[in-house]
Image: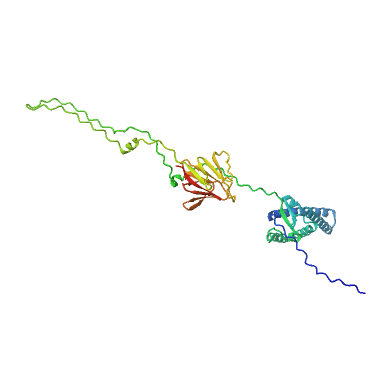
Length: 370
């Protein structure tokens, strides 16, 4: 009696694909990997040379020395493979803060793949005019996954990562403002007219030349029948001459001096800030050491395009309002009559009434107080 034969099952499918490599691992750069490789090779070849010298001194014949060196090289490679498979380390990687981990899990890859990787790297490190090492370096640089994985990394499924602590991103130090010397204000902006203070002087008359003294003459007898002449009269004195025109203008008293008009800025939120000293503007403005700051104006930024201490406003000695960018990340722009001009960090620019200053996604308009 024949036993029923079970129908053949479906053919086995293809093996499951390897898990994709993680892209969030901090991939090490090629320069540090090269230095780690140099340290590993230098230590290994130093021990090979030491064992060869010891064998040459203790053993007889070059064959025995070669076998001793070969056996020691296998021991070193196995030790390095175990250390790399279990801890992801080698002497060079430990010195430079690198680890060789699984590209899929981010953990140590295991002893087997690590031994395979070490074998490929060891063969590439043989004295072949550095062709093998150069080939592995080229495959790492041309990795299409942009993880710098060489041929040996793809065989073992490893990726070399940099485990050094990542420095915290810090904003650049705000440059301490220098004293503003507004050399172009007299050419670009008419300064506020200040009446001159002059002392009132009485009108002066030019000195008159005294008349020459008359010399006495001997008395004469008038002719008979003539009437005696009247005594000579002194010439009438001339009125004082008018002073020159310039003297007359200086003599006119002037009104008391009036203080110059001040400046203020209107933010895009409608707030107004009087510029009566050093004004710092930014996301969180902070005064530098030794700065005499009058106002700290915080500006909220929706897209974080305003720096912590973005710009400053100040009135120069001649009364002109100047603005200066304090090394902001996104820069500052002055809009005047439809023409925009970007500020150079650390260099002040004279502002006119009606100018618009853009600081990232915020803006302010320049006004003059009457």
